[in-house]
Structures are given as structure tokens and as C-alpha cells.
Image (cartoon, rainbow, N blue to C red; front, side, top):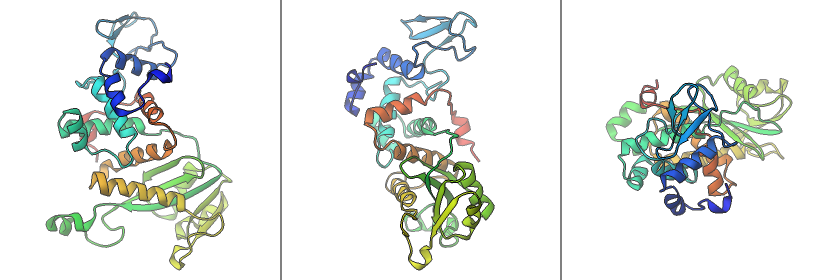
Length: 310
């Protein structure tokens, strides 16, 4: 697939993927790099292609499958001509895309657009088990509703204190010159904070945090440096956590400016979305889009699963 023949902008993507055969062929090439489709039911490579319907029929299990089966697009009545521009929009957004905005752009309901966006975020999830290394900055923050933006009744019910009260704690790690990771954390004790670092950072790396007491024990596994924000110290030579704090600023800008309010049970999906955007910020729009589509296989999210999250 020559890069020169592919779309380089949103308007070009809309025109390019309007042809259902072109859209199906593109997803197939992103899904099966060697050009050989694999039956999602029995994993056989023995099949034949029904071009008129853009489906394969497996010679082993006799079942038919399209390029959407086994991906975030499965069971969706929407065509890839709508799905792929939606992926392009979210993959290349600076501050996210609201479901109302996507719904208007695609001509679908807000509910449908909301479900689509969550499916795309599922494809953006990293899923990497490789540990960060080198110099790694670690920090935690709180994400939640802004009291002044709430109706008085909601504010009285939901805001019962200051600081992190009634908000969701999030922890993140940023490898300098590398990727960022972020996830919800429920245990802010020393065990919880240090456990997160040990799970995500390779031993003997340099780990920089603030002076929170929960990070004290990191010196046994890492070269640990800290800055004491309580006394106005934010940088001490190479020791600082400005990188991960900048990521928090970008995250909260997208929440405040685009999403307004996020249910805690869905927050991890938005963290995955913003981490994807940050980790691929140097790429061209087309490459970010292709990366998201290439991760669509093997990840399904049903509406029932989404709304039944605890």
C-alpha cells in the first residue's frame, strides 16, 4: 500500500473511504499485514473471497466473515465509510472529540457516536507489557467535576470536600524521550504507589517524583530523586516531574474543554485516548490513523459491557 495513494487529510479520508471496497481492503491490509486473511472462528487461512459481498468463506468451518468480525467494528450496522473518518477524527484530535460533535459530523445520534468513540478508545489502549526505563517521571493527580460548573443541587450532592475529595485518583509514568502511561489508582498508600512503579518501570532506572512519603521506598529498586513542591522546589538539576505534569495539563484541558464531565467508570478509556495522542504526537495524521486502525483487531466492546461497568 503506497503511502502516496492514501489520504493525508480528513476531507481526503472521507472521499477515499466512501468506496466500501476501498474501505474494506484498507482495514484488511491493516489487520493482516501479510495479505492473508485469517478466519476469526477457527483461525484457518484456507478460504475464498466473495467480492460481491466483501466477505470470506472459510473452507474449514464453512462460516463467512467480513473484515469487521473480531474488531471494534463488529456487529455495527454503520459502514466503514463512517467508521474510518471517525477514527481519523479522534486519532488526530488535539483535545478530544465530543459525541455531540461526532454525531453531527457523521449524521448519527449522540448515543451512537458516544458508543463509537468508546470503541475507538478501546483500539487506542496500549496493552504493552514492556517496562519503561532510563529516566522515568511518576506523579499522581485527581480528576473530577469542577464545582462551579455544576448545578447547585448536583454540587451539594457530589462535592463534600476540597482537594481530591470526591474526585478520582490517577497515576502516570513518563519515560523521557519515550511513552507515557496513566491509569486509575485506588490505593494511594506506599504499597500502592510503589507497586505501580515497580510494575511499570524496569529496575535500576532513574525515577523522579515529588516528595510524597509514599515514594520513599523506591530507593531500594531505583535511583530515586524527588523535588519538594511544598517548599517551592520544582526542579533540581535533571530531577523534576515537569513532563508528566504537562501531560496532566493536556488531559485536563481535554476534559474541561471537550468532555466537560466524565463518569469515573469510563475515565480509564479517556486516559488511554490522551496517552495515545501524546505517544504519537510526532507522527503525521495518516500514521496516527493507521496505528489506531491496526490495533482495532482482537478488541471488542459491546454496549452492554460498556454501560454495565461498575
